[in-house]
Amino acid sequence: MSVEEKRPTKRRRIQNEHAIQRLNVQRLTQYFTPDAPIIVGSYVRVILHSVGIGIILFVLYRILESFTDEIQARYHYEMDELAERARICHQNYVNHNCGPHLKGAVWQSFCDEWDRCRQFQAHTVGKTKIAAQVFGEVMNGFVEPLTLKAMLIICLLLFGFFIVTSLIVV
Image 1 (cartoon, rainbow, N blue to C red):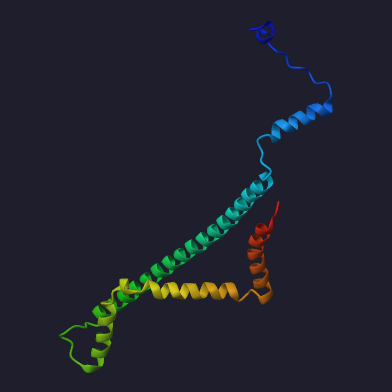
Image 2 (cartoon, helix red, strand yellow):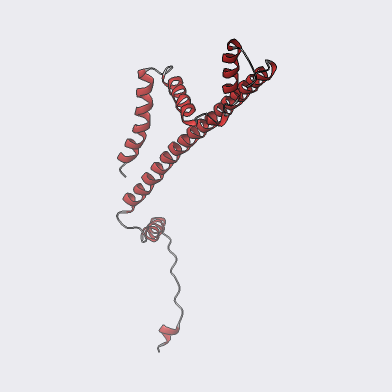
């Protein structure tokens, strides 16, 4: 080995500012491909679409949650109302001395009605019927105040977001 090979090499100090900037740019860009803007643009598009879909899913989740809460509240209200009605019917049945020993056709029709009413099971209330009523009321409440122009603007904003983010070209 020669003396020159053993001797440590010193880096030469660059005095020219333009040369320093060019070296820094070369160091940064040596890891990039020519397709880097397309790749970055694709990632930006995916992120924007993910955010948009996440917002839509969150809004749908909140709407469904409010529907189920409203259905549960209405169901419990109906159950309580029917239980109260059955209690009143039972009270009328007992107060008027109804039963198999009752004689007379006039009171028998009332007693039969009170007997059917007091034996009604509150849990037979259908949740599907209540859900359909709630859904219909909510949809009517949402659509009635909106004009055609407002609905068109909402649709354009929703679809426009995805169309514009799809057209972003880097």
